[in-house]
Length: 626
Image: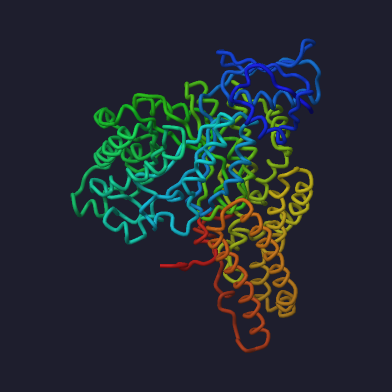
């Protein structure tokens, strides 16, 4: 489709050229004219009538969303008028490029930025505990793929042409285990992952981080973290200062950090949970019995935004209550929801839609004007980043409608990505075998633990007994293979899952098959397991690993894959050990297999399907490392 944009296009032409291919247009002087009008009205207006094509916009990001709306509509209509009212002043994703070791390559970030421009998302954060270069600190981000200052500036420049703000997102209290493990920082540790409040070098270090994080970007906004400092004041701080309340420690630390932030001319936001945890007898962020006194609130800075993060609730009443609790702090919070990508290979779209719809409906009613879609990398970032595209589209469509229209969401997703909403929704089915409730709002991750558990010592075998998990994954393998052929440039999302399902079709209940054959004295079955089942599982694991390896290095820097290599290596070695142990038993060189004689019991005493958050609890009941 040839188009020629005229009118108020100053500052837009570079972005248009960069986005042309993804938008499905060719920019040409002999193309159909599109008259562009910049107006003060916040509405987006896109119109085609007998007089021509028109775009009316207020902000740069609205223009690029409008371009997409125009092209999408022209594919099926000759005359139309589309009006949208933006619901939020800030709306965009936060990618965790630290906790799971996956630092997204700049080209991959740019690919997301182009899709975000078409969707109309206007902000991006790269959550970086130590994934940015800090001059004079060689161990900060060492061997972890940290971004250079030049890389961050390049991304900021790229985002800016679409009207997308790049906001630094760091940590200035807790979540710094990968920094504080180095002896160079021994004197500023409170505990293994928390900075020592009150120590002068702590604040020198924080100032250096704030300068380095903010220097390469245009925005003067910055997210300073401060969440989940679980043992605040109970380590070196306690030894040096005695016991103090977490409220007092938080306010004292925040005051010092704010002095630095103010001096640097930055506008900060921070996660709000530590105040709620300090006021809860259970240390729970979402404890309705939490008490935060007026005195504590009076001690909080009045020029910082608090970020309420929540992706665990599905009822609007809770979000309403907690947003109003935040308003007691003297301002309306920023809200951070979640695109559930952090519990293995599988993005849980059931929980994503249920929590996001409830939360953003309330945000619109309660006057919350800034929202973040978090994508966490917890425990290895096994999930492909691009499986989250539908989640981004969900946040975008909420951002331009008082009420979400799911049919429009589906159409917009297909236009913006070339992919199918129903197929992306089906990703969740990989974690919904028999025994899991539809939608999986409990956010269980059975595909992950069935992959990583040991076939000779299956910690979850008793939980899946009697469930046709093998049949589930055999059917899903065929489905994912089909989806890989019909989702355009994003077929690779399903290629990974097809290989995962291929493994699980054999491995999910392999531990039960092996144990039952052994306890039943069926040596012929054991012989078949050694000759056929285990070798075939091994082949399929190698196929999964090979494709996962390829995709990782296309999307991410190489750092972080070493974690995944250890997992695959351990899995493959355990399959070899299983074959060797069973073969030794069949040959008579060992008279029993004690690991198969141990009575299987439900994981954590819970019958049926369960949740297991961390990899370290999946392959063995023993400590993987000290």
